[in-house]
Picture 1 (cartoon, rainbow, N blue to C red):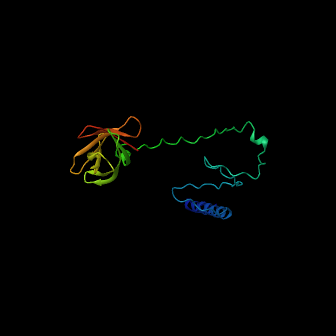
Picture 2: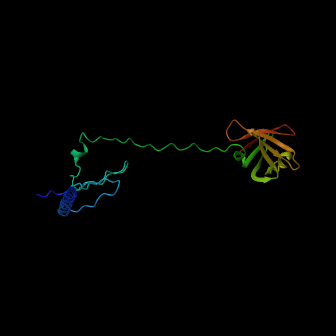
Picture 3: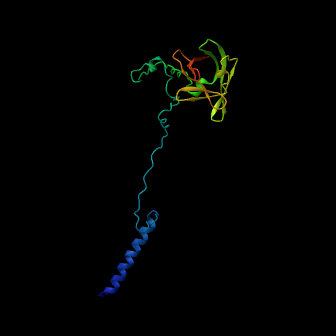
Length: 195
């Protein structure tokens, strides 16, 4: 009997194993070999896909769902729905009236009355005249008051000026309302201006 050599035996085993690999490779379904460093992931069967609308963002009312019954008296008073009671809104109080103070409060026409009881008109303008403001007097029997041509407001007092810068009178806001009370500078006689 012939004894096969070891090398022949090795060749036969190699041929048999290659044949077995080739036949199993052809019978198996074709799959792509994984790339180096990556593992093959088995396919996952897909289920059914359902769609549902998203909830509205906070602060936005949701549109009514056609599949739900319309809200009725029972739905509005159901214990699961909180009841919100709106309190009546009262409009804010109007701001207090703006009362002109300072220079703006004294601009305009005034009725002047001196200590003798004589009346005339004094007008304090908002038009500038150098460092002062323009003023005029009409039908004033008092000579010092009749010459008033400018005025100013400083430290809560109204100063009436004659041409050349001489102070004709100084007045302050009176206690009786919107009038001005003071005195003529030369004589010291009382002077009142009222609207």
